[in-house]
Image 1 (cartoon, rainbow, N blue to C red):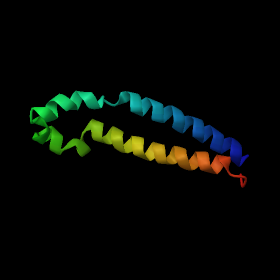
Image 2 (image 1 turned 135 degrees about the vertical axis):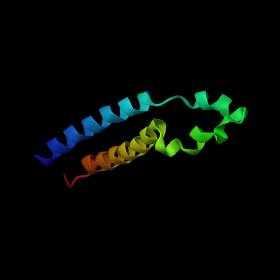
Image 3 (image 1 turned 180 degrees about the vertical axis):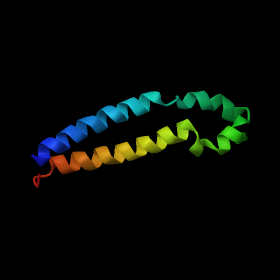
Amino acid sequence: MIQTVLNIVFVIVCIALTIVVLMQEGKSAGLTGSISGIADSYWGKNKGRSMEGTLEKITKVLAILLIVLAIVLNSRFV
């Protein structure tokens, strides 16, 4: 029973992680801005409060959850 629930949660986390990663902007979009000095602007300093910063935080949490669930599902205790 618990393994079925964990498998369902694992699939949901996989789909959510895929969607969140696809929603993020590419890193190359910020490369030209950092070369010309735009990285020190207001948006560069407050990236953690922006939508992009939020998506990065969600990605980190989902990635950690994915790894933990994979380890738990692979163990012989479940």
